[in-house]
Image (cartoon, rainbow, N blue to C red; front, side, top):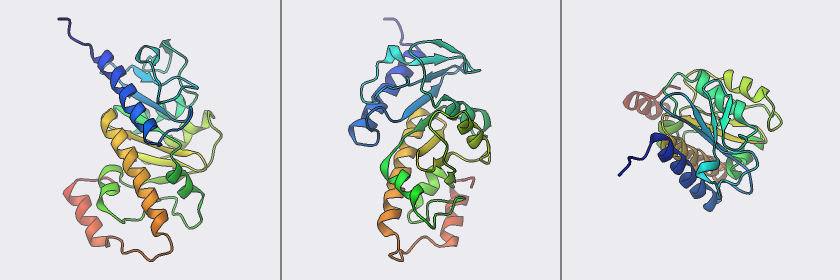
Length: 218
């Protein structure tokens, strides 16, 4: 039996996880895009105008490490957003996920949101999986300046929300990036539910204990 290549496995995994996000309402229509990096630095990227619910593994765009389109369908117009995260993030980065998920977008529209730390510490899990989530200014979809916005983040950052647009998350592996994105959306929903209700958040000491125990960079 011929062994399945790394690239084939990753193509299939992208499509599987993308379909899961779509089926659970985290990606609608043709919104959202995913990229994942192969061991040799090439990127697999979801195509422009495609639905995450109905991707073809063979149709994923294959990009060279410098972003040159090598094969497959044309990549998402948000490719600059993805390549910038691979470029500047200090931690090993194997995947980037960008969605237009409703609660994260809704939180970006509300007043009194700290642009340096969008999510109040209501539970430990966003801190553990995301660190500090920054709010970035609005830029039109597909604007190359989206890459510059990501480059403005500290090198330890793994997540941000583009105002009036949607969240973007980077992680060591594709699965971890998807799971972290789900945690971001859940935390945004919880934040909105608790807004103006004087919720009992984690204390500074409790947050510091998490940071130390899990070696989190904020």
